[in-house]
Length: 272
Image (tube, rainbow, N blue to C red; front, side, top):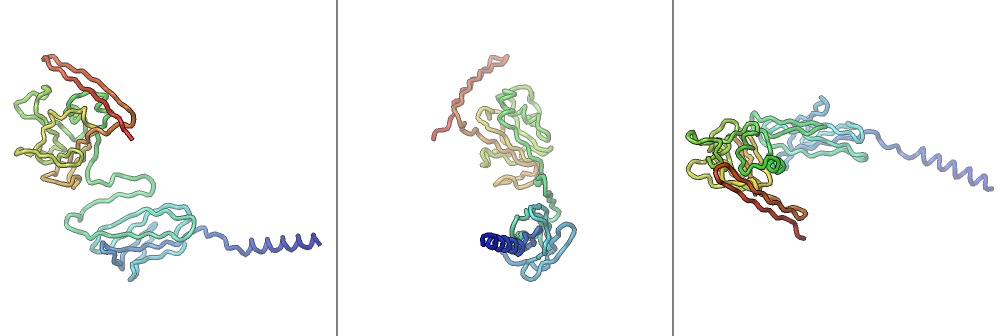
């Protein structure tokens, strides 16, 4: 009798395994295209691997079994009167791959803009070049002023008055970005625009490097800052020091050949 029961159980197990649906090796792709008001954009061109479909009146485009499970690829969308858009999609291990893409209306400032995208390595998508003078560089060079480090950054030069000696530590300096004039940049401290006076430039001579965490430099035209006034050259943001996680102390003493001296003491930590 036990042999009969075992045979029946084995047969039922085989039947259940055969009846269970196999997991699909591919997923359906559902792309929904909307505008800034969350309204559907019909007729938008959705391109996936050189294959282009048009969205319906509901703004949706569906591709049956369009990608393999666990795959990543790029979906590009374009529509008349809107900027082009491209997004990365990761196909889930179960269910359909759905993405909602919001298109921005094309304006006079956006016509001729460029976008870059990749499914593997992220590229620089900013309209200008971005550099950071880090705290490590400031410590390595032990410069009390930022002018020398500006001169070592591509596309940046510490401008000074024509009658002054650029080697003098007390000379007035102000960074120029990509050949633009002093007043053709936006200067910020911790993201806040600074008063630049009637000449439109912020003199960095007396801005000590000891109080800085780093200096962010965005070169090229673009609204990098919350306030842009003739900032066609770019923006410079001086970030003040962050508190250290562990107790940190430093003591520096500097002197020059003209009888000048500089003393710097630092104590920093995080409590709580």
